[in-house]
Amino acid sequence: MSTELPEAIAAYFAGSNAHDADACAACFADDALVLDENRERQGIAAIRDWKAEVTMKYLPVVEIILLTRAGGRIVVTGRVAGNFPNSPVDLRYDFTLKGEKIARLEIHP
Image (cartoon, rainbow, N blue to C red; front, side, top):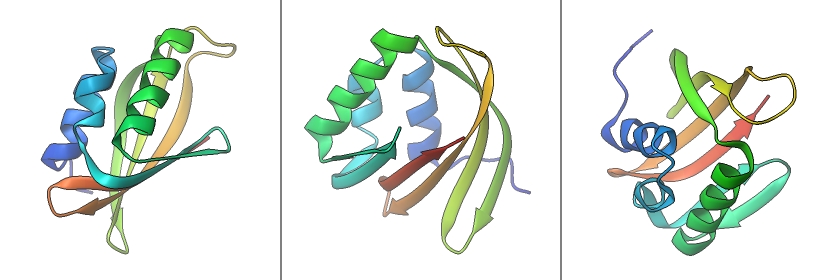
C-alpha cells in the first residue's frame, strides 16, 4: 500500500476538510464526473455546486485510513464524520486521474 496521495487528490481532501468548494472543484478536469449519493455531476460548475451543497448539509471531515491502487484507479477509504445519522462512516473514494487533475470520482459506502 502506498501512503502518498497524488497532488490533486491530496488537495481535494484538504479543500474538503476546510469546507472550501472552490478549492475542491479546482482539483478536477474541466469535463470531470462525480458520482455520489446516486447522482452524477459533470463539469467544474456542477462539481463545485455539489461540494458546496454537501458541505452545507453535512459539514463532513474525512480522515484517510487506507489508500490502494487498482487498474489505474486510486481508491481511498476515508472515515467521514459530520452532521448526519450514524456519523462517522467509512466511505470509499474511487479516483481516476487525467494528467494532474481528477477525471472521475465515485463515492461508495
